[in-house]
Image 1 (cartoon, rainbow, N blue to C red):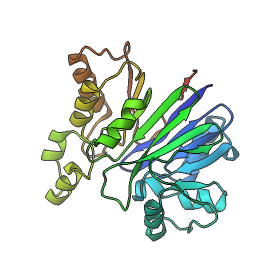
Image 2 (tube, helix red, strand yellow):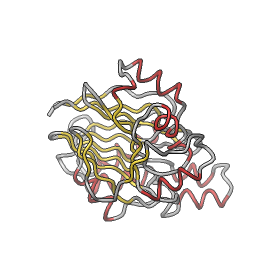
Image 3 (spheres, one colour):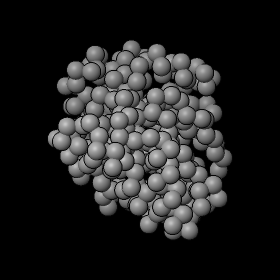
Image 4 (cartoon, rainbow, N blue to C red):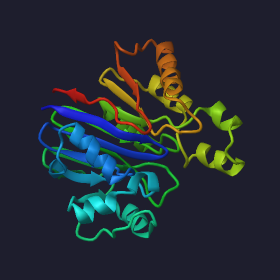
Amino acid sequence: MKLVFFSLASGSSGNCYYLGTPEYGLLIDAGISIRTIKKVLKDRAIDLSQIMAVLVTHDHADHIKTVGYLGEKLNIPVYSTEGVHQGIAKSRYVEETLTASKRIIQKEVPFQIKDFTITAFQVPHDSTDSVGYYIELGEHKFTIATDVGHITETVGKYIAKANHLVLEANYDEEMLRFGNYPQFLKERVASPTGHLSNKEAAEYLATHYRPELKNIWLCHLSRDNNHPELAYKTVDIRLFDEGIRVGKDVSLVALKRTTPSDVYEFDD
């Protein structure tokens, strides 16, 4: 079975990812404009009628701006936990209240959407609630963990299952420390319920690498406190230190913040 993945946008300004088969797919988060979503999907020859669901990680604006439109105007089911849905309902960034499209899921209770088996898992972040997703399609095991304050035992469990992994690398520690953010915001970003740094992502990946892991995409890069090249280099060097060769043992990509990524296709 073929798995198709690409990012429509991945950064502190907006996040949206596509995961699918050649016939249908899912969106993970929808924090960018509907115009952009439609354009990127059309450019990739994907019709909106092929989108079976939107999976929402948490209720911050850069992840939910368009879920109301997708759910209530286009009748695409929107899945997340009760806590995340409560946050969406209160958000001033979502114009349409989710009613008919609202789907409530439980953490670590798998559910099915066509050929996808999906499990939400708890992620530490300072939102109303926050989850990552572990998605199985045939032999493919895909994990996305974004907006991760720190890697808990639960997050680590689902990272360990993956052969395709999307993991946050939000900020460079030096850029954050010496940057223009006010002190309270610097502390929030670096807190255990904030974001994962390049260094933290690199250290975890290097010390928990398994040969079954074939693809790593670094996601949710900060506009002000990171660069794609820096995130990539930080992880690449740390993996190399452990004898893990990027391009040979594992593929590594730092996703673009505001423009679509390449399309990645994988057969069983």
